[in-house]
Image (tube, rainbow, N blue to C red; front, side):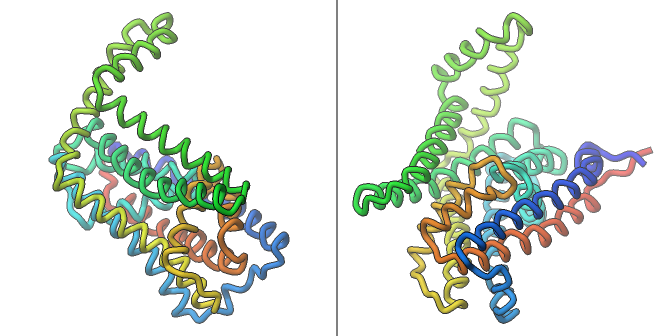
Length: 332
C-alpha cells in the first residue's frame, strides 16, 4: 500500500513514534520519580484526587490546544490557505503528541508544516513555514517576556540567584526567535545572513546562497501578510487565552490539593517552567521540574505534570492516529 506525502511522512514514522513515545514517557516518569524522592513528595498523590477534578484539569489543557488550533485556522486564512477550523484543531492536538516526545517541545512544528502543506488547499512550503514561525514567535515572546520579568524580580528584589537560569534561558529564546523573525522580514539583515552562510557553503554548493535567499524571501513575504493589524490582534488574543488556560491547570491543581496559589502566580510559574523546558530532553524533562522547584510545592508539580504530560500525550496520540487515517491517500 502506497500513500501520499502526508501518509508516508506519518505512517512510515509511526513505529519510530511509538518507540519514542514509550522512551519519552519513561524518561519523564523517571525524572519525576527522582524529583519526588528529592522533594519527598508522593508520586501516587494524583490518585487521591476525584476523577472529575483530574478531568477538569485535563479539559483546561485541551481548551488551550483548541485556542491554538483556532489561531492556526486564522493564520492559514490570512495566508490564503483553505483548511477547515476542525482540521486545524485536530492538527494542533495531533502535533502535541510529537511535541511531547521530542527535545524542547519542538517536534510538533514539523507535523504542522507537513500537514498544512499537504492538506491545505493553495498551500506551499513558504506559507506553512511562515505560519509556524509566527506561532512560535507569539508563544515564545509572550511566555518568555513574563518569565524574564519574573526572574529579574526574584533576582534583584529577593536575591534568589537560582533565577539567573530561567532569566538566561528566556533571554536566549527571545533573542534567537526575534532575530530569526527579523532575518526573514528585513532585506539588509537577510542579505548579511545569506552572505555569512555562503562564506561556509560556496566551496561545496556554489548556488546554495541564491536558493537560500530565495527561500527566505519567499517565507518573509508570507510573514508580511500575517502582520496585518486585525490578524495580529486576533492571534495575540488567542495566544494569551491559551496561556491563561495553561496557567489555570496549575491553579486548579493547587486548589484541588488545598494548596491554593493565585491565578497570577500560577501564570508566572507556568512561564518559568516553560522557559526551562528548552532543555534538549523529551517534554523538557528536568528543566520543567527545576522551574517548578523554584515556584511551586512538589505535590502540585507531580499532579500537574502527570495530568498535563502523561494524560495529554495519550489523548493527543489518538488525534495523531486520526490524522494518519483521515489523510492517508491510497494510490495505485
